[in-house]
Amino acid sequence: MVPITVKMIGTRLEIRGIEGMHAINFGQMATVKGIPAVVLLSGGLDSTTTLAIATRDAYTVHALTFRYGQRHAHEIDAARRIAARYRVSRHEIVDVDLRAFGGSALTADIPVPKDREIGDGIPVTYVPARNTIFLAFALAYAEVTGASDIFIGVNHMDSSGYPDCRPEYIAAFERLANLATKASTEDRTAIRIRTPLIDLTKREIIELGLSLDVDYSMTTSCYDPDPSGVACGRCDACQLRLRGFAEVGIADPAS
Image (cartoon, helix red, strand yellow):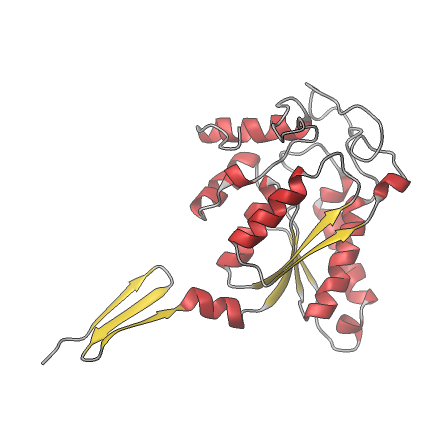
């Protein structure tokens, strides 16, 4: 009599018996049958970690990236590669040209601050109402895809002090979302703004991402990279990122 053996390898269940070997990939099943969610994906460290969390939790991911007139397209290219690596169900890259308003070093001809003491006020790299604009688009995307969960990688611990990254802002937007949509008012679907990184330090975010096999060499965080995409190492985003990897005890793989 041929013995039957059962082995679980990650999300793959292998059953060997009389008729050979059969395999069931539960990760693939979760992708097909998982609960839909919208994930805001910039191509940076935080949003990629957030995508990895949503994938770990077996959501069917509808990724959303913005070409908003930022200084460079390297993060858009990174977002495309990352979305492909995680095999998201759908990836939309939306054009919203915030250069029409300016008011930020990321969307106007204003120098990006370098070697700044982080924590000394809201810097000029703040883009007016950016997260409100992004979340409004994400809310519309969620209604179309049937998602009740919107993931955004905001963080207020190791940050530049942007007001639209605070817990009270996220709570306020979630209240708005549940007043403003057909899904919430007629269909009685509660909209949830998921912020899994909001209370973590950059070190903790990186450690979490590494535990989820995030390839941080694919990500970009710099506000002012050179034309080839090499990070400046001196803007707020670079300082926070480099400090996080230093605290983990490893070199930044994107450097």
